[in-house]
Structure formats: C-alpha cells, structure tokens
Image 1: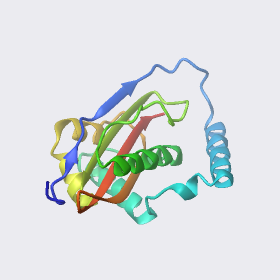
Image 2: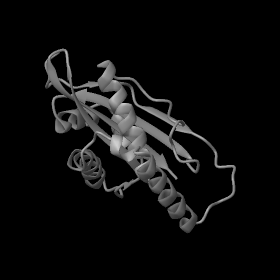
Image 3: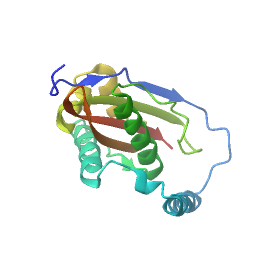
Image 4: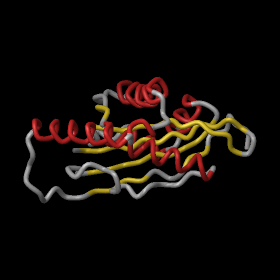
Length: 172
C-alpha cells in the first residue's frame, strides 16, 4: 500500500442511557481540572505523542466539515484526547488499525460515543478518506455529538511514514 493511500476501519458508535444524577457544569469543570492535575502529576499527559498542531489539524478538519454541513463545532475534551492518543500510539506500535473499547477511558457522563480510526500519508488524506466513507462521515456529521478528542501519531509502517488518526466523539 502506498503511503498516500489511507486505510480506515469501520466506524463505531455506542449508546448508553444516562441513569445517574445530572451533574452541574461546575462539577464537570472541577472533574476535568482534577484529571488534569492527576495527569500532570503522574506524567500521563507528557506521554501524549500528538503534537498540539497535529491534534488541532485533526479537530479543525472535523469542525470545518461540520460547519460546511451547517452543524455546530465540537468542543475539545482533554480526557478524550488522552484516550485517542493512547489508542493511536497502540495502532502505530502494531502497525495496524482497529477500534478501542469505547467505554474505556471515556468520561463517566457520556450518553453516546463514536470513534473513527484511520491511517495514511497525511492528516488531510486521512480526513478526506473519512469524509468519503459513509459511516465515518456519519460520525463526523452526527448532530448529537458535542465533544471530541483527537490524536495524530506518526510512525513508520512497512517502510512508509504514516500518521494514525483517532477521533473519539461524545454526547455528554
């Protein structure tokens, strides 16, 4: 396979009814702050391989596609970024793509989750492949989703420089 030819796995979506008590926004922000402090203290955030410019490129491509379809942009979720980055590193390390277990590493307050995974020669090439795949496009343009995490991890697979991208979508 040429490095410019993207490879995608089937998109994945999961639903879970919210049966717990409704949390306020301030509690949500406090929970995120606590996670950030814990991650910074444990070194977890420093293990992320996605650079900010690459992660932003992935999120900006998704939000540009949503804007073109008349949809609201997705808000970046740091917890989902960490989940996405860990999975992108795994896929790079095994030089293959597959889906994560969606619930693992997701915030407790999720109502719906979705995931796109792919690899190719550039972030733009992989995004174009997502948009040309009905299932992946459906995840990107799902109006129910309001948050996302993303990753873009580079590696060398079978002699070709390859980027592994992950989108983790959430309705919170």
